[in-house]
Image (cartoon, rainbow, N blue to C red; front, side, top):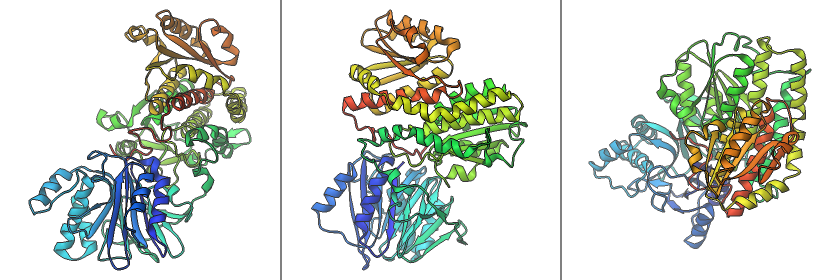
Length: 612
């Protein structure tokens, strides 16, 4: 959830580190810092609470720090409150070892007590300082840096991505990872480490991905990688195809609104390469034609928005395939003693491909013999590498913490998988298949219709931005979509919001309906539209206001009963959710904008959740 950047080269490190941290700020942003190692072996640290701008100001106002090797970090607090002392980098007691860290050291208390008994004094509340002190303990006792690294790694338990400097080795950075992302960038006379490729795009597009328990030693001219047994490993080099401009705002006020507007193009990039001669073709699944034919149950596993995609997917897959589908929160999957085996397909969904709970759930599924299929955005991510099959969304970099285009591309891929599997099982007619493909091809244009006419959404948001509580209701896929609409609102506006299956209102929650409460009714499923209408009226008759999201064809039904109608074009049942989510994203965005919230960096949240 934190961001790491490291640089070895011929240029001054500080500007490169600060630029990289700004690109990584979305991963964590309650404090930041840099450590720079001079050619003479002098280590200097600058760090502070707050955003990167605060760090820049601090560096500019204090004595200069110079050097061509350095590491930087932007933090999302896990151990210890956000303050200057708990910010990274963290140093050992003698100041020889400096560390930046992403992840959680689960046995840090035990190790801290071990070190304190040996006279080590701690300055911070962080688990990261334990790493620096422990490594220094081994280094001072043995005098061999790599022995100290491996001894430290043998003792710590948990997840980590580490960048390490030692003042006795002024030309190098040591990097290590386990269950937290870390990659290496290769330049001309320079090399880098980073937790996300966006930090490196302006310097290099050639990268390799560290695997669990690998250790890398970087200098400006070389990169050497070792496995847990200290044997040298040859890394495969990858070229990053993302356009640098995709990680910039491009004239928009926020990354979130830019990424909402990019959704039609993101859908095209996800869909187009997988359509051949009027058929859906997943090259990634071509070698396992019996993947679904031998499957008696499907599990969909994810966290947050990815979990919400799974709830929509359950409705789609069960109706189309008549195979039972269970949607599981990744953080609960391992602890629920799941009934999965060789005849189960476990679909794991993660934007980053590094979500720790999701990764652990996938590993548990594989251990139980299930086949695993990952839907991720980041090429070469841990989940992508470990899954039996991986389907990339190709949504491009998503910088805003609140996901939009990643959600939409995950959603359309699940829809395509539904029809792909349906066809393999012989459960779809040629006419129905053709109708779906036609609707899929038209989907980006219909999304653009919504994005070209957002005035009504802006107006509606301006009426309700000052409320304290909102409820989203719907039935079937509309209910599943409400989960995401509610999450978007609470993530970026900090308004209390909940989502319910519409029929559940009367089972307790209706007691909260009163003036000053808004109910957003999602009513696009024709088979249950009348019932959703009735549930909405139950709320408004008790004083709540109502806004309805429905299709343009059904808008007249609600004209006399609600304060505002958010109308979307009608499309195929399996694709309607992709259109419906756009007004909900925009509504959340403009509510937050009216409230003056920090939309791209909402409080307490981080983009990539790599801790349990």
